Structure formats: C-alpha cells, structure tokens
Image (cartoon, rainbow, N blue to C red; front, top):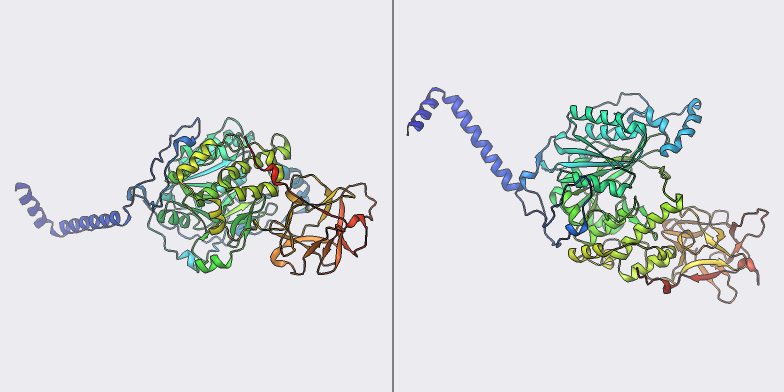
Length: 611
C-alpha cells in the first residue's frame, strides 16, 4: 500500500510525464502481444537438429525424418524486424561497366585479355576495370517495389563457395550483398575457400574479411584442406551456419535491388518453399548486366538443366506473372534460398556426389517428390557471370569431369526415378549404364522415411511439359553401314548442323527418337531442313515446319523426308581426310549405299543394373 501511495504521489507531481510513460508502455505491450499472436507458429521440423562440426559434414542417417503435409512456419522469436533500404540514385556514375553497360575494349589491351581469359574463363581484365561497388539500375516492376512483404523475416546465412575465384568478382559479389540487403536480415556471410592456391586468396583475403567484420559486416572465412568440389564445400558451410535460412550464391554474382526479401517472404509463409531468384546475365567478356525474362527450369534427356518458356497451364494457374512466384520443375542450382532445418530434413546434398553437377537435379526431385515446392520469384534478381566452360582442372580432364557428373546423375536416377522413366534415361544415355553409383543404401532409407511420391507423379503433375516421353516408334542411333557413320549433332544446340560421325554407342548427341507422327527429334530439338533446302539442322520444335516428317523404308533402308520427297544422304563429295561427313537431302536413287540408314534401337537388355 505504501508503494501504491508513493506511485500515486509521483503521478500527481509528474502527471503528464507519468501518463505518457504509462500509455507508451501499454501500447508496446499490446503491440508485442499482437505480433506474438500474429506470428506465433507451429512446431519446428521434427528431428531436424544437426551437429555443428567444422571437421566433417552432416551424415544422412542423422537426418532421416517422417514427412508430413504440415504448414511449417516460424516462431516469432526466430524472426527479426527489417527496414527497406533507402534507394540510392547513382545513375550519373560514368566508370567502366556502370549502370550495367558493357565495357568498351580498346585494341591496346586485347592481347592481354586473351592471355588471361583462360584463368577464370571470363574477361579478367574487364572485371578488374569494373568498380567493386558498381551502380546497377533498379529494373523491378512497380508491382515488385510495392510487394507486400511481412515486417518480420528469418535471418540468413549466405554461403559462397569458391575455388581460385578472381578477386574482383568475389569481392563484388560480397559488396553487392552489403549494398542491397537490409543488414538486420544478414546473420552471416560464410565464405568457403575450396582449396584455392591463388595468392590473392590467402593473407590478402584474410585482411579483407577482418576489415569487413570491423565494418559490421559479419563474414566468416572457412578453408578446406584441398579442392573437394562445390557440393562438399557447401555442405561444410551449411554445417556451420547459424541463420534460419540458407542462401547459396556463386562467387561471381551481383545481387540486385530488393533481391533477398521476396525469397524470404515465401519461405516465411511456408518453410517447405525453396525459392530461386531470376538469374540475370553478366556477359563473360564485356561484363554487361542484362535482365533475364522469367522462365521455368527443366532438363533434357541427359538430365542437363535447361530453361523453358512458361506454359499455358502455369500461366492460367498463376494469373499474375509480374510479382508472384512461379512453380519450377527444376532449379539451376547455383542460387537459391532454403530453410536450414528443411534443407537437412530433405537430406541436404548427397555427400557421395563428387565436385559439382547433378546435385541440382537431385535436390529438385526431392523437393517436389517429398512434399516441398520449388519456386522462382520474378521480383528477385541476381546477376551471374555465365561461362562457356569451367576453368578448373579435373582428374582425367574433360572425360574425368563428364564421368563425375554422370555418376552424380546416375545416383539421382537410381534413387528417385521409377522403372519406366529410369529405363528411358538409360536408353537415351547407354553410356551411363556402366557407371557404378556407389552405395545408395542411405539415400533409399531417406526416400522411405520421407514417404516421397513417385517420379511418375512428378512427371504427370509437375514436369508435364517435359520432352521426356514413353511413347515413340524408335529410340537409338541412325547408322550408315557403308561408312559406319552415325547422325550426330555434336553440340546439342538449336541450329546445329546434322553430320555423320563415327558411331560411338554411348548416346548423347547420337541419340535420336522418331515419334509416331514421323518427326525425328533429339531432346527438345527436331531435325529439319535448313533454308537452302539441302543441309539438315536441328531446331527447337516450336520453330519447325510440321511438314518435316520422315519415313524409313525397311526394304531400301532409305530415310525419306515426306515434305520434299528427298532422301537423307552421306555426302560423298569430299577430299578431306576427316571421317566426318555432311548429311544432306538428295534425290532418292535405288541401291545408293550413302542413302541407306539402319535405325539401331538402344537395347533394353543391358538396363537392369546390380551393384
């Protein structure tokens, strides 16, 4: 009672101040109760704790959990307030590459550029000319700028793995994060040095990281003892991450305005959402920055990632394509955001995979088949330097790299595909049948524990627009017995010339399908006549004439183009010592050995594999 009287006396003496303090306290109490009620959420993912150990990565047997169709969201205590960054107008900057414009190359340094291009497989001289904090215009649509994003979002651990990355591209990646990300959302940036031996990535990088931390940018540098590849480096970084959400970026990126918030908003709404930004293109020669259009991710017969246009069904389902995420059957794999616990719930990366390649397809399958959703958000843009080839030396060179990637894909195929689709993969890629995938026991146990849907469900409901099909007249290689040459497109790219190459029997660019309609196709490409009327090319199906159909005669072995009534012919007019010949259309003549073609179907007999 004495305390109460003293309190009342204090209010009488300082009534205006006391009332203000009292009312303010009540306001904040009510506000926080409202926030807690609004964002208090379900239970966290079951059994998803994982050890933090900087000597090894997470093991699959520790993450086997039961999948449930539950809307997992966050507890309020695991979210943080954030404020949009103030828009900075730097459009008057005129240095090289400013505004995303291409850098003009003078003749004086052209030879030097050619000498250094092989180091990183991009123009190192131009990259060094571009400011580390260059200005990029905000090209988001108004609907994205005004996007409704929750005021509370989970913090992120941004993981950037690199091996012998150029200084300018690595630091520009980090600087773009700092300049275009609300600082309250960054729990940490984790740099994983995957066995680099470049001198600028030693003490110079240590000093730079220390300076970043002094300037309140939380950066951790982890060094691997040797080059183990992207998959193992990312596993090492994710095992040490403290943020609620993992954001994986490559080391030659530039984050654009408002890139992170849309990704987090979708994960906040459902922790089983895995969200990718639109990947803008940074030219590997001029470092121009070009905004990419919104596309779906998929894969071809070899399970190599491809971009595809948004189909009518997805447009109709979605409605607004300007500010809402679209469902994508697959991810490119370099840039994406995922809830940390959900990442381990799904089995993280397959740690038995080597280096990189195929891990994106494997994770895409698991996301969709095991209860998650894979999205691409049109309001999130991150630039990426696209290179035509890797700068890294693999054991065994190109063949060693292809072997490692194929083995990774075989691991994904054997675990996540049903028999008819698995058989199709091995029919289209007979060279993959001999690859030993290693022990798959833990991955099968993971699949069983998560109670995942079948691959047939995935193809019917998610990747229904795929060029994979189980209905065809013929699948194999097209061989001329006279020369032992097979149809070959070599590059598997649209507009590639059709040629005859020595038959190798391992599939790839020598695998063709004839549909029941008579078209001869390869992945999403169709064999057509070029504008001159004699040579043959492959083009995307939507750009081809429906008259480009073929008839194979079992009597004469001729392949007749029905639209022109001409026969496919090995070009005999050559003086070259090369075994490669053109495949042309000529007038059909009886008993011409250069017009005889065997349709050699890939055999089902070798598909059953036991390891």
